[in-house]
Amino acid sequence: MILELGDGADEYGRAARRAFEAAGGDDLVMRADADPAGREQLVGPILQGLGAFDLKPRADADELEAAAALCRSAGYWALPYPLAERLAVPADLDADGLIVVDEQAPAGAVAGLSKRWAAVTLAGVRSTVVAQSAAGPALVAELTLTEIDAHGADDVALALVLPCWTLLGMLDRALDLTIAHVRLREQFGQPLAKFQGVQFQLTDAEVERSGLDMLAKYALWSIAAGRPDAVADALALRSAALDAAEVVFRVCHQLHGAVGFCDETALSWLSRYSQPLRRLPWCLSATRERLVSRTGRAGLAGLYS
Image 1 (cartoon, helix red, strand yellow):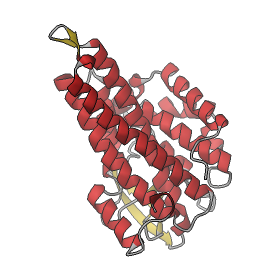
Image 2 (cartoon, rainbow, N blue to C red; image 1 turned 30 degrees about the horizontal axis):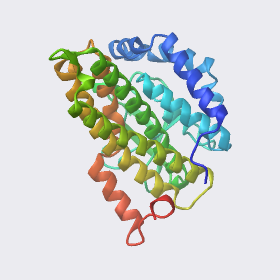
Image 3 (tube, one colour; image 1 turned 45 degrees about the vertical axis):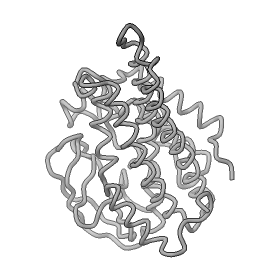
Image 4 (spheres, rainbow, N blue to C red; image 1 turned 90 degrees about the horizontal axis):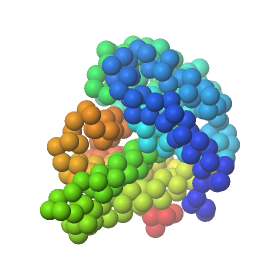
C-alpha cells in the first residue's frame, strides 16, 4: 500500500486552499452563518471554478485522492458547504449529494441549500430527503426521509471517509492558528511558545493530528483498493478523527484562553463548524459501538493488525 497522496492531488489541494483564501477565507463562514440561504451563491462559484463537481471519486483513484485533498482544504477554511456530501454521491442516484444518517435522528448540515439530497444508513438503506427543518447551529437541519431501496452498502465508506478529511483540515488550521498565537503572545517577558508546558501540549495535539493524517490516507487506499473491510476502516477512521478532534481543540482552546471562544477569533468559528462533523451521524461512543458490532471478535485487519 502507498500511504501518500499523489503529487497531482497535493497540488490540487494547495490550489484549492489558495482559492478559498482569495475568495474571503474566514469571512466566508461568517457570511454564510448570517445568511444560510445565500451560501450556494457564496461558495458554489468557487467550487465550480476549481472543477470540484467534475470529480468522480467513486470511479477513479486519482480523482478520489483529489477529492480528499479538496475536502481537507475546505476544512482548513471551515468552508460553509457540504462539499464531502456532494462529492460522495453515487452515480446511480438522482441526487446532488449523499448524507450518512442515523436511523433514529437523521440530520445534516444542509440548511439553506435547495439541492436534491439523498441519505444512506450504515445498513445501506437509501432514502430521498423530502423535507428539512429550519437552520440550527452550524447550519444543521433535521431531515425527513422517504426510503428508496436497501442497496447502498457500497456507498457508505466514501461518504464516511470524505468528511473525516474535512475534519482533518480543520485540525490542520486549529494547530496553525495556535502555534501563531503562542509565538505572538507573551507572558512573564517571553513568548508562550518558550514554555515547556505549552510545547508538551502542542506535541500531544500534533501526535493526534499526524496519526489521523496517516489513518485517513489508509482509509482512502482501502476504498480505492476495493477492500471488503472498507466500511470498517471508515468507521475506525471516524473514531480516530473524533478522538483527535477532542484533543486538538481542547489544547488549542486552552492555549488561546478566553479569546478562543470569541467570534472575532478564527478558532471559535472553526471549532463551532467542526461540531456537525463530530456529532453527525454519530458521536464517538456511538461510532465505536457500530465499529465493534461490525468487526466482532475478528477485529480490524490491515494497518491495524
